[in-house]
Image (cartoon, rainbow, N blue to C red; front, side, top):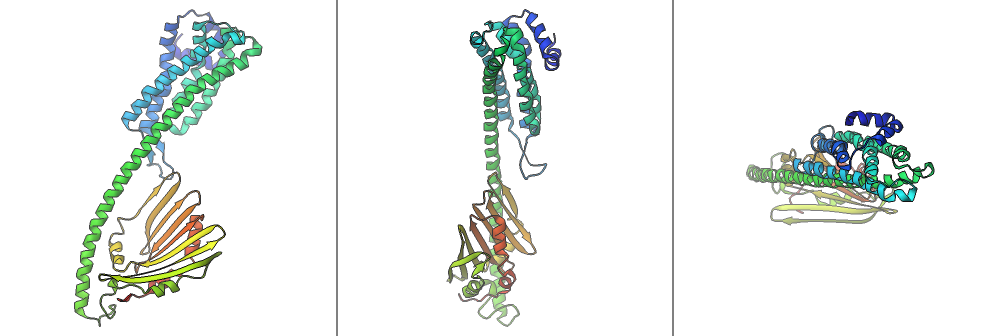
Length: 397
């Protein structure tokens, strides 16, 4: 009987098909050559197609975001999963032969091989669902039917007493599960390695983007220096230029930043408050920060004036937009009404950061421990960003 026809009869009418199989006289080499070789190829080839060409969906990346195995890794899956399938069927046959006397059954190597090969039909044929990774759970569901096939074939092929068919079948199912676990482990290992390779490529691309951003920042800095020299030559009486030079070379006073930090942010109470300012070469800097506490939650709020770098970041804004997400964390940077926003958080709620770079270059950074991103954002909304954005710089710290 042709393999496809046999598989169909086994799945639809197993008991009568087992009787036909029992009546056949096939040697062990014939049995292994014909049905087993093509049955074992089904999950191997389908899995190769699913992992290499269809790909696994990446959460949050949309329809275009899929993780695919490189062709060499896919070929490794194809070869090893095929050998595992062959070995799994062989293991079931060997266990059936060795344990037959314990269950009052006929001990015959060729008969045990028949039981293993044809009893595995559902599990191996169900491997076709691996061609579409989203349908992979169906392969496991279909494989369960092989347990019933083995149970139905024991009385006919192995002459197992009815009272012992269930424990005997359970032993054989456990033997087959070993092969299933090996195949699942191989799949997970290859996918994990592919994910690491993809992450490495993404990091390399990010490095190239940062290099491009650095070049752009360097050019913008040169332009700012030239603009500052021009403004100084025009004099202090022009609108927008404070006495003492270009305001872009000054900084918002640290005391003004400190005054913007409230005593309470919702239930969080301020426990420390500090400020500092200074001059490095011709750059004036200022910073103020405070720590807030509520029960086991900790929040640090830091206000920093970027000074000259405000315009530089504005020039480089298109380069620093982006997002990244893993199974445990996520971060995103984007522009909104002239402000640059950045969020970075762990999905278990242990850490969250929310940063706003205002149009005048003042950076408002909140980092919360044991706080969700929404809680940190709620605290940020209680800081008067419009007031901070209206603060003017001076050229002395």
